[in-house]
Length: 116
Image 1 (cartoon, helix red, strand yellow):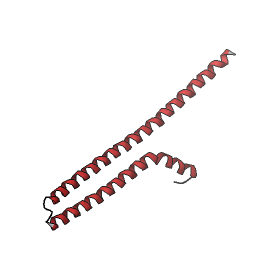
Image 2: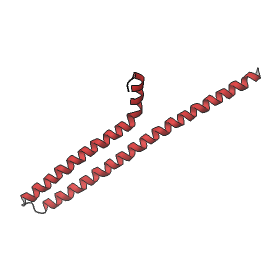
Image 3: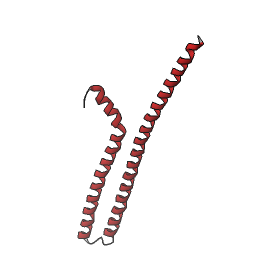
Image 4: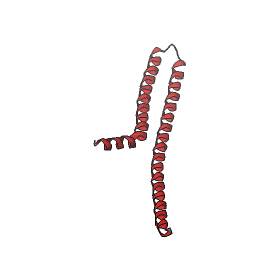
């Protein structure tokens, strides 16, 4: 009877080891996705902070001469352009974060449904 226990014990150990190996691979892939999302979020934060700081400089410059309406209008146009660009960049970064975190489940769902 003990002769049969040894092969089953070895098989069980082998299966547990394989399952652990697969779980480590899945965990590492998830960590890479989260690290990428964090990097994109940091870049987004830096971009937004730079935009806010630049806008403040333009406003401060325009406020030095409040009677100069042409200068004030130019400052407002710059602000509008920069804020529009920042909004687009922010949306692109958020879409990138979202797609990187949800790419694997979407691919699995498509494969399960038979779509390519």
